Amino acid sequence: MENVHLAQRIRAFRKLKGYTQAQLAAETGISLAVLGAVERGNRRPEDQILTKIAEALGISVAELKDQNA
Image (cartoon, rainbow, N blue to C red; front, top):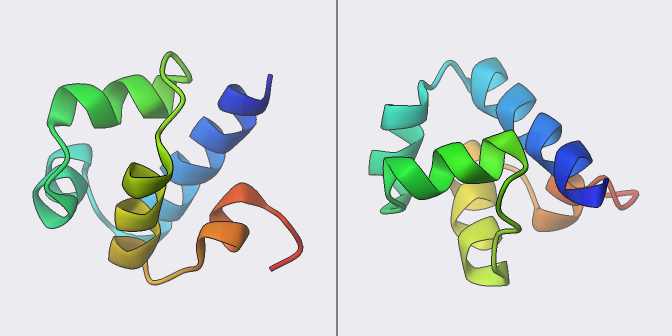
């Protein structure tokens, strides 16, 4: 369930920033396949991936995880 919540937050922040999945993948250096799996909740991202995503979106990892950032 945690993966699904995180996946929804990543997608929401990405859309808020105006990025497509391909743009965010290019910005972070994460493959489109991995990013897609993370956004679908099929893959739990490693901390390094979460950090790259958060930086590209201009937010903290805690905010991305919804940990009272």
